[in-house]
Length: 231
Image (cartoon, rainbow, N blue to C red; front, side):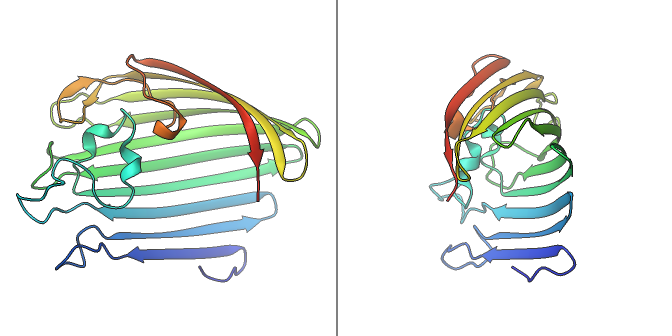
């Protein structure tokens, strides 16, 4: 992580894969730049992870065995866990005017197949979102957002699309502890791949496995209340 200069801060990482006989297989790399100046915050980041196999006898063929394996816990992308590489580019910016904060974000994720993948080609997801939050007073904040994701057609599956709406409320009990409630809705259409590489109808999945299970249908609603503590 670099020092902050003129509001800019940069970070970079590289992780060796730990694969015997290779420094390339299973490696991880990434970089990011952020900017903070008054009401404007912005950031852009790049991440790449490798899932290369050692050969046809590799016991992990058909699965993701590199870093970030927990990413493939959703019906949205479980069909691409056999990818050779995963690449993510993301950008976001927020602007605050008094009690109101506006956010815009964009992400591009690519799962490139390899010799031992269960599908062929490169699966690409483009996602864009808008978020608005408003501080009603020093304790109570409301927020709402919309996200649209479109996948590319790959291995005979038509392009899947996902529309998601979310709303949340936060109530501060102290500077470090808040109560929160949130609700999210997602609608999916088109086709994708299942974990075995078969073409299936796209199903909704609000969040990932840590937030709940994917739906068996094209729509899903998730609601949650909880206590948030910042250390």
